[in-house]
Length: 478
Ligand code: ADP
Ligand code: GLC
Image (tube, rainbow, N blue to C red; front, side):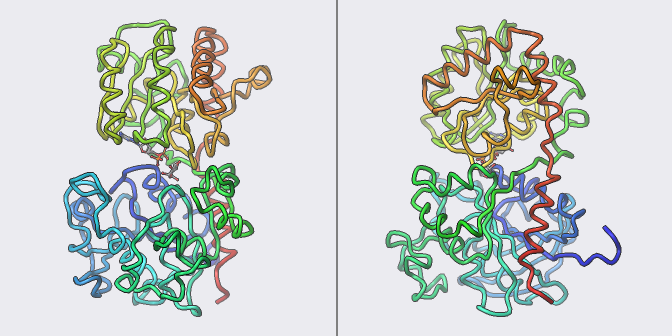
């Protein structure tokens, strides 16, 4: 950065942020963006709810603003942690709770989720209009429905621009219409052109209609969002906003995910170095030696991820000498299904969430399986590429944009990095598993695939530049 370059001030507003609190890829992205953007002239601060587990990790925090929110007192606190410049919304009546950040002990959404995340959006809007004594953003970057009400809470004039990123259009942030008053929303905006969605309040739709620019996390998903199949009822809105929508591919945090430096694995720079990790993984899970690929899965277990298809196709993988190690949690039916599958000596399953184990799986596996029905970007295929662990993926969203299918042409030209399948069905996953196993048995071709994967760039470089350009584009003139 040249000394005279004017920095763009951006407030990133997110419901999760690695390494402080994470349930999925949004946390990885929110945690990595500020660092990636710093070299592009962006000064990013991150507004995050003060969940119990977040507060427990912070020290040296300073109150910078006090207010009353939804029947309780709240404070905005500034803190630095893990290289992040944080603004924490400390509102104990909304966020000081045990367990999952979105779900109560009954496994259902906390009933006051509309208020909890409206509070986050209200505070973002206040910061956007000068609530902090020494820092006001030029742009607010809102992530997903939890931050999508921000445009509703901003004044029409004298406001920063809003960029909304859609990480997953499946989550709308719906609330009953009776909540309109308590959420401080304008009745006149409860229309098809506002935040009304089939008689309910949709936080996501508010943002889709009200943000200055929309982005999503891969170019292919940007196109898919405008179709009935993927738009989840909002495809019309996406088509309406198409001129303001762009797809910017996620990158990975190469300080955290790098096989040459990762403290959680035996380091390696070439694929030959994977064998130590593979042996250790087999040992850890008591798996025998085998002729086929050692496949891994690290995933939420939900319909999105298509792992029910994998359960059906598992016998085919095992029949070809393949093995599976899965780490995941979510839908109880899928958890049970995989627990039962683990009765086979060539299958190992850990139900739960375990960051360190996820690194051991990705380093030790030969292949990583991601048969998603839809996938806005997906990060685990990128981790796979970075670790020379060949991704087998459905041809959708970011999986389509980041993996080069081992077609005869791609193999011949030396660019193939994985296996893709389409349509997303039982039969086509089975034939993809067949292809994976035969590629694996051809040692020379497999080694070439690993080499190609290891050299495919998966960092933030071009995408950080694209975000920086977008922020600049929407920054109101001084
Ligand atoms: P999504 O956000 O839809 O869950 P992504 O692939 O974008 O999918 O990101 C998932 C992130 O969560 C990755 O960093 C992945 O490693 C991590 N993850 C998912 N499930 C687990 C788990 N059970 N244990 C540890 N990490 C997990
Ligand atoms: C969502 C999507 C995933 C994406 C992540 C980060 O959780 O499901 O595909 O990688 O957000 O953008």
